[in-house]
Length: 214
Ligand code: TZP
Ligand code: MG
Image (cartoon, rainbow, N blue to C red; front, side, top):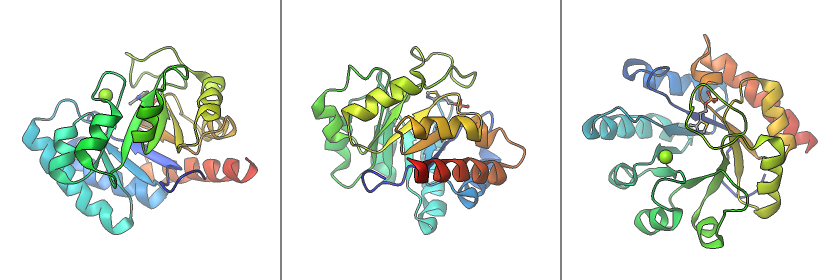
């Protein structure tokens, strides 16, 4: 594994699949199944709701040693003392790094291996190749990178790298790892499953096996 951050199984919340009453329990189930990193992604919550959920999740994940990042919201990350994940249309990693300091987790979505300025890479803790495949979970994505796009990003950087988008089976998870990623980021494959813990465990096993073969 490259870097020190464990990105083997990265779960991303989605309000329609992890509604607030079940948010904490869903994330803990994913962690019991082997999730190593959690992103709170909720574009509907009010500021107060997001702050509260972020603080609650931070507290329940902390004993498991699983870091929490919040999608987009640098202000929330700063107030709650967690990391942030930014995309191409959000604040740049250098800005997030400046605000959150050297120890924070700053994740960056990359849609094009040709557009990864060195200063943004230097400010990032990990990269998410986005999307690997078309996904119904997020339709306003860039053109899918496919495993070859993941491989191109891998060639350009040693940062911890995950694929995201359409990773809906252990087979696809293994394909992303074989392309050079260190882990996979998923929404529906875990949180859309009847048994999120078991689904996470199956994905994690596929990732671990593919990493052993990498
Ligand atoms: N960013 C790029 S694709 C995506 C996000 C948040 C959604 C991934 O969802 P799923 O269900 O794992 O395909
Ligand atoms: Mg974003």
